[in-house]
Image: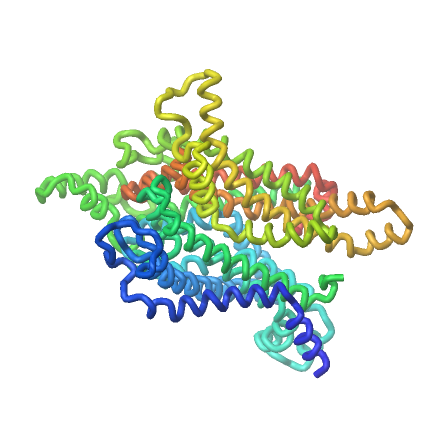
Length: 283
Length: 332
């Protein structure tokens, strides 16, 4: 019980974690309820006059084509959270699967999985994603999550493997083995809980990484074909002269939101690291 | 050392093999018919027989009428002859020639941005670690910088310095009025156009390495050897020097691991600035459904990253004496 209150104490005192989760929460709420505050669909030609700066009617102005930037922004935020959650979640899961297996089994299984991890690690993820995306005529948000998750796992697998490696020779694991526990249960009940904090950190970083990868894919026009996204907003802004015409309201919000969300995730990561690892607490 | 090198080379060879195989597999096993898509996009002829003729021509070009294993062998053979097909978007230029024209710009942009960003970021991170005042200001800023999507920083810089202040050009590698020559005017113009894309990659890199180094130095300063040195009463600068030498090693490996992400970032930066490297080419290829060009870009990016990785491995051999004596061959 004492341990729990200590963690709580450091959690409530940790500014990095509080600020980070606060920012995430604000954007999450905006993504959830934002779309109901606008009567325009993201791709509707709402304003007949083309580009307009922010006003009472169009809170974030309109694009070159007269589309409502606010509507695009909040709907893009939704896509961003979906990609982070599902893409990052899948990346973490695959990383855990491979990391735990390689680290726990060792030997030849480890050799093969490790070689495979190293290979996927050196291939530039984006290059693979773009060649897959380029050949698909219709792409959905779910597909994007799937691709990102299936290419983002290598470093997570490596990190988890290393941790598992150091844990599997501990006494309590030996004890579990002696008592006849199945490997899967040992990993689930003995090893995973001991690196729970670590897994949380991996997920947060995967979450942020997935968002950045999605933004890159969307920006070069290989994102989902049927939804708006923050990366796509930036691509349209660049291609349709938002820069020379000074339509800052078109390209500032999407990038700012990505930066804020990913930055907040990193901040949470450091904050949690400090809570879990007393050595790092501010002295 | 031999073992370390052989291990690395085997991994890279396997990676390249896998990448080429993926490059071959995807167009053939994706749902949909790439040739049909290409033809409908181009929509050269509305006449059915003309379309069928074009279709047969492209099918032969892809070699789609042969058995699969033969297609695969032919693919490798063509690759070794430097034949990546013909660009449909810049018809009839071979893809290799299109790429050759773009690569110098990539090298010119990426090599200085990555190396300088890495070097200065590490130096600065080491300097900022455990210095309270600097840390409080630098740390949040660095976190914001690494969280920034490359294209957004590019867009912001282009907007502010190119449009609002109007002191830098925002598109192209040189002015339209100039022809590439070996003159001072042209060189200056080239640099003028190079600066903003360079700066946007450099700044993000700088932030990332600075944080990494700062955290690493803090770990090292907590390590036993640092405490021991402190207890002996050695000067702070000496302890920091040792900490830096130890902390720089993971940063070198980190550079190898992050290379793919950096290259991806550079690609979108080129798109923002219409800088005529591979990234800009790629966007054009995607928009024009030029599959050969997309595949060529893919191979070039992978090859570039693999070569850079190998160079980093060689550097690592020089910097870390333990690898040379085969003591930590496993870790990498």
